[in-house]
Image 1 (cartoon, helix red, strand yellow):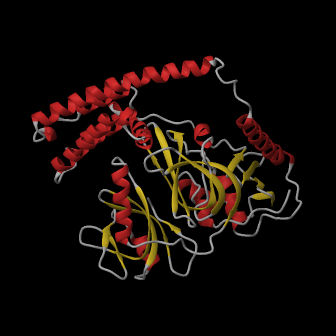
Image 2 (cartoon, rainbow, N blue to C red):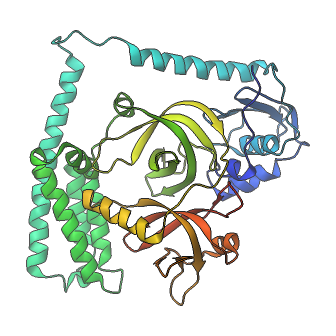
Image 3 (cartoon, rainbow, N blue to C red):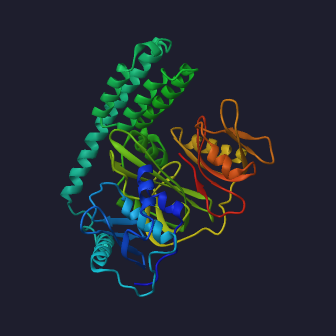
Length: 451
């Protein structure tokens, strides 16, 4: 094996943890005492960690993934032993690193299996397809299933249109007293119609009436967007191809990652800006934001895990990936699939940012192309976080432009700033910015902020 890749920081390691408890448990294992047989070479870091049993746990990490394996019974991914090993390695002591070092057999077997799987996947992607015009029963069956689903979704969209018409004819005034049951029933009908995206938006619409404030205006706005989405699907044949793909995605149709990777690939040095998880009773969703400073382009990677389990994809926040990504077809291409990774480095400077006004202009332009956009990435340069009577905000250091921040606790951002301008990465939404990472003027490494 060749010499190991550049070391990560402790923040990058802890960003991989599935929860705060795993961060604390991993930090407790970031000491040489429980470890033996540690080593690192190439993309592998390995070690034996003493546990409650008679045999130590075998822990190995593939830094190029990153991917993790441990003989412990934990169902968390990565487990505390993998986090502790990486923290020990990141600290620069306790994990010997040497060119040509050989990993123990159990670690090498796992790494070899990963290499073999990657080679098999690459070979499968280059295999010749069937002759033109040849019958492909599996593809025919898939096409028929897609056609049947499209018919069902059309029926669901038409029914939703009628429900929205009835809502507006009856007026919104009594919606806060009508209860949530009617919305739950409509959402269930959209699920039956195989339109999960419509079902999700119906549930959100039903929750508006109980949100207080000027809820009728918000309900009317959400109903308008829902109507636009349903009409867009019913008239998708007349839409430009990128917008039609956006409508399909918002409805709930998915595209296989392999199909996306078969399209154009964009290789760049991608800075991992932020990573965070959201969860409901069925699914954990991980959002990872990448940024190419050379082109100013953002990419959003999504990874999913069953309820209670962390998604598999995890990237070290603050690292620079030399990698290929492929973007999903859309009116506003943001979501991407990670392809081949060629190496990992560290940033030499903080990413460039723009003014508050320019960021809001870019958000408005994106909304014109995709009205259902949930979040738009923005990098702001030289902004100062300020607490207000009702809400925090960030203001341009050189102008009077400012924008509110979502959430109530932004003291970590304030501590990074110290009253001085910072670079801020955030997701822009209809009611403000969700801050995700910040940089000071003299540091190329960002600090993750609670999502």
